[in-house]
Image (cartoon, rainbow, N blue to C red):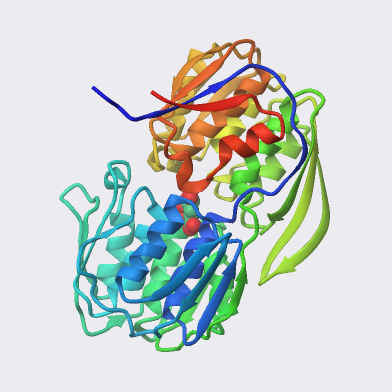
Length: 439
Ligand code: S3P
């Protein structure tokens, strides 16, 4: 049977050197389309991530009547339609693999007075959506999941939403953003409290569009009924994509790599904090701010890593970087222990199990637990591992080959295009010995 699947083949060894700008931040790219679409005026975005996830958001807004030019070399021009200018799409909105698109759009669309259906691919259709529909229903939305609490999501028109004060049971920026975006359409002040700090791109970007957002400690509040004013957005390089190279250059002897224009939002920099605790040599320079987001250049040189107990307050700040951090742990001296990270089980794949399975195939001592993993550093062997269609797993095992003693083959890698188009080319350009094959 033709499977039409992509396999990465990575020769062992090598080192990473030179300079590299990884593609634009995925979280910020999604939000630029969403807020630009609802704004009054023209929003110009540069550095937009031309990956499948953010393109799914772009197409969804086009299908709701928003004129969007591009992307052309990262540049996108959005003709905002205002808070109430979206129109009902002819077909269900297909959000592919993107949890961010589905969860944020559920909130943004709940109060539009439109009849809509949101669908996704097999992975997205297995991910929990009650975490967003429960607070939205509390706000008066009519939104339904399947009996299992998964997509498709059916949204029915309602006249108005009411503000809520929502204590989030999970530390999720997607849930926080969903409720705040619904809050734009609610009567009164909507507040969300987070059990741990999560990424704050929605809050920063709302302010950039001239919309007041109030933060008091762990509580974020927004008043409904305002308007968004178009603005220009310069999307930083995605720290989650840079993370593969931060780890790669740390573990591959002789590496010296500079990553340019990387987003350094303090709600996203857990990967740097964790790697430094492990002994990584990461130098930050040229700190500046673009469109309300801090960026910097990062120079990484190879360094011996040691195993650590990962502080739990870093977990939400590095939530997407654990697959590659597990590779760092596999190369470290001693044991690394992660706890408090059960959320990893409901990402694009069950990232604890998928990584543990792959690492074990490569001969690494990796012991999964319900909310984390324990990994003892040692040597990494060659072998064939399955990414389960999860982009970050595929890229993490590609990086592992830098320290392996045999070839690593990674199956089911097409979804790398959801977040990191041209990964193979860029990785090969700085020294990874990777190629992609149709199998
Ligand atoms: C994201 C938030 C995170 C992250 C995802 C992007 C966002 O999810 O894993 O890749 O853009 O808000 P959770 O907030 O659900 O942890």
